[in-house]
Amino acid sequence: MPSAPSPTPTRARLVVLVSGSGTNLQALIDATADPAYGAEVVAVGADRDGIEGLARAERAAIPTFVEKLADHPDREAWDAALTAQVAAHEPDLVVLAGFMKLAGPHFLGRFGGRTLNTHPALSPSFPGMHGPRDALEYGVKITGATLFVVDAGVDTGPIVAQVAVQVLPDDDVASLHERIKTSERRMLVDSVGELARRGFTLTDRTLTLGDPA
Image (cartoon, rainbow, N blue to C red; front, side):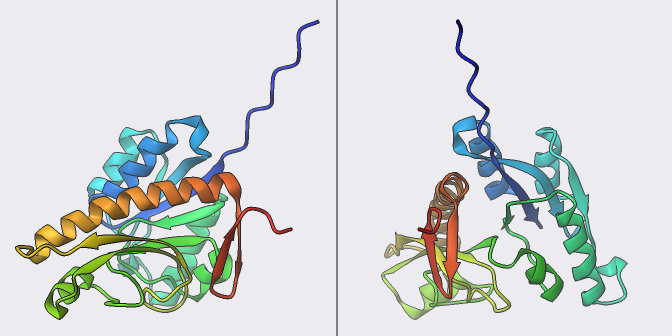
């Protein structure tokens, strides 16, 4: 008697938010093409129209949405609307892939503890918009990228993973940032896949892979 087919493994649902070209999004789309990766991108959202990140999603037949700050009376209303848009796709994880807006209280109340972002420096050093520039100006010999769980601060959330990048003697901000982005992209894809496949728990600032004992 033939055996029954094995059930298809459930894949984690990812909603990815973008504001620009979407190179990290593309890396995730490429990775999720392999069922063994353990996750699928179920929607891509943005805070503005006409960006390559949305075009990448559309080419991959992934649903998209846009929630502009200017379409709302204040930031709180925008935060609530963005939260509702993301929630409609029932994500297990939310990935901010070059999304240039801070998560607000509505968003963190719904998706806190399962929203990930990257920063192009080794946190807690050089937070904010200019991590590569600040690292170069400070004269460090090693910088890198950080993947973290988003909280209410700026690049202050619990650290998931970090990757080191050497600062070369002839680096300028552009060359250093480009090498950081390459390492950052690889770290993001590897880490999201592992979180999706194994699950995780977050206790204070400590993230532990796997189900709790």
